[in-house]
Image 1: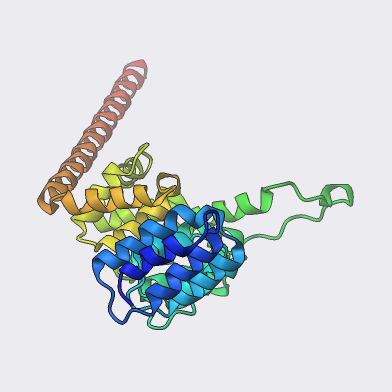
Image 2: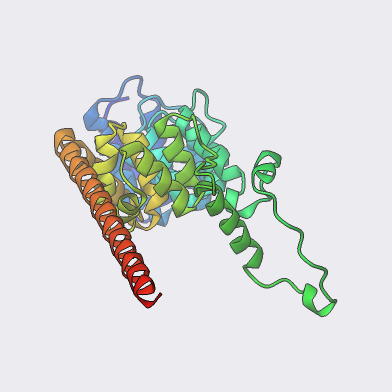
Length: 336
């Protein structure tokens, strides 16, 4: 069957019979052993305008048919993949037309239902599999700390409450968990920091801390990775756009999919549609790594300058204190 068959189908089909045309066009395409780019484009041109006019059953039929098609048209597959899992499941689990970036974007937009279906794919990218496992688990700030964490940061039992005081305050438990987590990342009195992600590779540490939803965790990991202070890392992630974070990730020489996964975890509101994802990837590709390294060097210089200013201020304070003590001692000697 050639590409002319698509036109013949359209000619023979009565006006308004979108369902019949939609199914027939896809069936004809799937019978092609090795469709050309032109035939793929023709199918997309024919079916996409009909998409909103066809029933759920037709969409389910086409999704199942294209999931077995080696050369399925990417635009139509992506459109079908945005449907509920009852329709999109065959494509989410089998279609080669969905790239890793497509899968991550779908998980970001549709959450666990799509994520659980994507998890059934064979040879799934390890990064995506880890992302799905992280989504399956409640984040650290919403769960009871594991036994090892409890031992590191024991929580004193609360005093007994009266019956009236036992009503839970909304958000109190979550905020208490956040405070405990932040205290674990902070240096202790002996100058030792308890870091739950100590010893992990840089990317794993950034990814896992970003997925906790705790900004302080990720900022600490980013400061370690870039060798800058916490203030600088915080300023990188608290800007209105991800431009500074983009430079940081490029300087660390992360691949596009890894950089995107971290960016979407830190700035989820910046990726509401596929065009935003494409823009991020284009910007990441076009950003020269040396330019990103120059930006990080500037951050390190600012970190050093801040430390020098802090040391100078401490020295001046100490000098004033000693001078004050000397004046007090001289006054006391005169009085005696």
